[in-house]
Image (cartoon, rainbow, N blue to C red):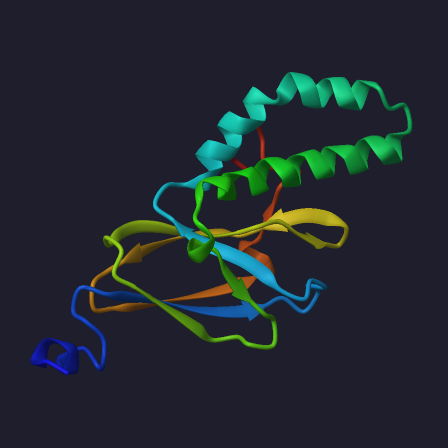
Length: 163
């Protein structure tokens, strides 16, 4: 190990770390898929939502049952958010298993503004996800706790990606 690595506690000076904690008792999912984005994903969500709006509205119009309409809308929203992950390579999508909280990810990707983004999960029957901004700084660790107070309800996001 060189001096640069030693002074950083075992990691290269240019690398940064992200430590994740999961604190969502109501999460029924066995695992949570996540990635680190370099752009706010709500912009892409908004753009994709506008792009498919006509098709989504057409599908909703074909269904008279209010319960089915709500289920279709939830599925549509979750699908549009999941689409944001299509541009990522498989090794850029990670898995967080609820009992294994406190996992750390080390990266030598460029530092700067980042977003911890998860794929949608169902909480209380609603499609939800996390999009938590953070600043990646070389040689430093950022800790993010995924909890109900920083959860994004995909049904509540408007066409501009704002809650």
